[in-house]
Amino acid sequence: FGMFVFRLIWIARGLRDRFGQLILAGFAIIIALQSLVNMGAISGLFPLTGVPLPFVSFGGTALAVFLTMSGISVNISKYS
Image 1 (spheres, rainbow, N blue to C red):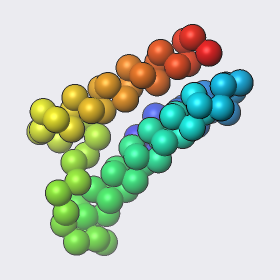
Image 2: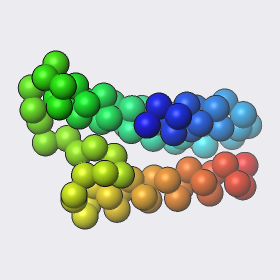
Image 3: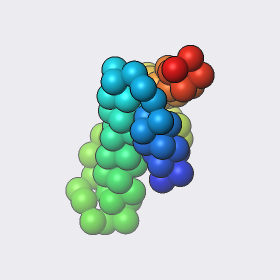
């Protein structure tokens, strides 16, 4: 997850479009926070919550949202 978030930030920094930068940075923050909360809960540092692990958890809506965010990220990086 760290490499995915790092890559999103790297692509966002290289964009000239401010809106694209904000979208990619927001996606990176969402994925990073949900990953950290989930891994912290599994390791016992945080209380268990209903936050799904991105791209791994068994949930149709969460998986659809993360795949949509990935598709939007690829589109922004390709056409900007």
